[in-house]
Image (tube, rainbow, N blue to C red; front, side):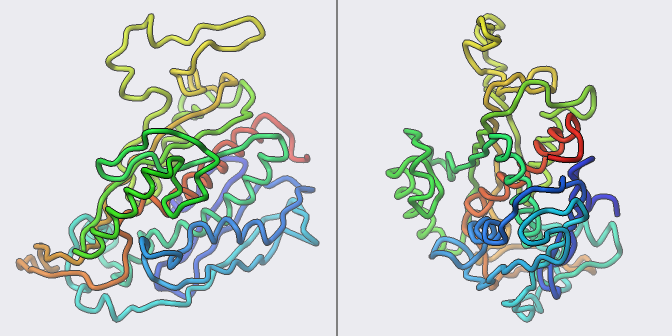
Length: 352
């Protein structure tokens, strides 16, 4: 299936299922000579892994990455980089009562219709567990971009109807929510604990800022940088919306309000476009937002049908997040890095 690959030059291929032996990724196209500390890759994975706090799933995966190839003595060799993460804390029995049911909001029905069968253990390949492989690959892309002073920062700006009131990026890693507003983070945490208690979930929005991107990255017409970023974000589990710059708010503006006037020195007076014009970076910060739906796995009773079409009422007893957007923050950063790195290398040769 070609749908397991992403990118043209910096290309990743992920593999594995939620309750399989392992998940992993192969990276093609990483230039030789890049310093890549295994500890850095692990740090990125630790930001995404489950079981970190009382507001995420308690599944206790170490997410310890094993580098199989492509890195020698901490330096990329230019050959494919292979990484694998073994699944340790699987509880497949939690899904025994769901093997013949189509869970609302999940890919059970669509996978069944496409393949004629499905892995019901933790959603198999459609599980967000797969995103750990993306984060491992994203760590390599982040190192590559930092080499050229390109930096990526993602964070929560809203959960449910609770939205940040201020924005201080220095505060993101000081709270469980990965939020740039401490007061809002506290309010969100309280809300999530209440949802966890009753067995429900909520959605959220992640914003991402990429700085240091030179003008000129992106391809016409179908490989626009903005289009590839949208594809990258909407490929992440539970995403339902993407907007760049002022996004949907642009529909309420006049052209005189929305245009970004240019200044001497090839600068811009504003950034309504979000750093991309005509699908090509203009040198401004690239700013976009991604909307995540509420987690579909909830403990409250739900109605569905089984594989024979019979109506069923059931509840889910597994381990799940009350808001998937929070653990999606490093995934957004990873997919942004992979996308920008790929477009960056389209304009460069294969050596640093």
